[in-house]
Image (cartoon, rainbow, N blue to C red):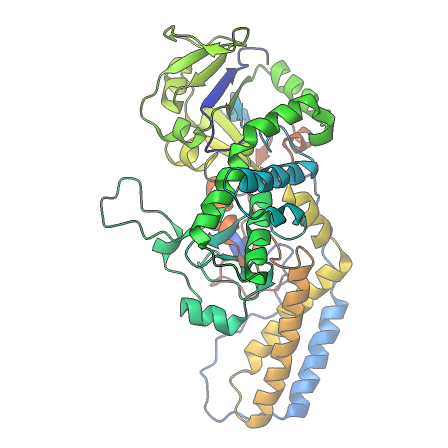
Length: 503
Ligand SMILES: [Mg+2]
């Protein structure tokens, strides 16, 4: 459900019933083979020469080496991946978000939200009737992109706040790299454009000009935003990107109550059945774990985790209203509205590492509970299924290996002098660019992987790795592990430790 619509709902199902730095590039040093260790040991000597023939010979040798490497084994798409060590023996309480954490929707949900939002733009905001003909393109956007509300551009940033060139879109068309550099004057976006000031900061005005669309419900929103922008551009209609952004957002989000009603009446049309969910809950129940659900029925969930005080209220399911009674203790099976995480902790005595909370949104679900309350966290990222499927294709593995080795070849030859050398390097760079784009397109033609921008982690990944102890494609992946399992992160390789390939 939308974060901006509704107040948190706490359903207590408990009782006996029912390093993190960017793990980033370094973490992806898995399956590494160390193949050279002397890099950087020699002092650069001016005027070093190498013939083009020798360079070509080195290229062929490298290619041979690449072909002789065994491809890494497949990644298990049902795996649980650790960013931080997590011992489930310490976890007594399991908490869950609802939408896209326990309830996973079919692609029909994206179409539904898009269509409802588009019709709302026409009905409520009087957008041109002709936009009713704009159909949803389900392969256009991925989550985690940023929208520049001043310039009306949708773009992908990496963990260093660098723009990934080739992924900046105005409407449905990419903006050429030279224009992007003219617009932003830099490839790195100032942090104040991207992140709102710290909530306790009193300094100056808010300079945030970009919003990140990190929620799965925002994917159809991005589709609508770009379709309408494209319509305006094609028809030379002047528009204000910020107004368009706000209208699209409000239109889509104001449709959430209608959407919920439609889903309730046609569950099988919109919800992916997950029979393993009952098995998962039964197993937690048998192990005497407590469970609770915190979700939005009238929005404002981030406030559940951030507000200092807001009384919990009992929801009467029969009367469908909230009661005035003071809540002094939580009872099994009762639904509560509003409240704060502080009250939940005070009433239950649950503390920090005893609680493991799962959500699909790395910030609104996971950031505050881990930063402020020391809860352990699990992220449900459904895109992992599709991304891992692609990572496991032999062609992808070969390309990723060769990209890494070709980059090393370029790195090792770049300090030689001479025109011939530069020509050969330019040829290798062109091949490298083609490879990088081929690897990107596998995931999404426009924006590539949710997790990477070329070799770097995306801005989305950085946040995910920072706020999630573990992450997985579906909550039921935990059934492949025991209740007492400890998840260990890979040690990874730091840039100063070894020179290695992802092979
Ligand atoms: Mg959710």
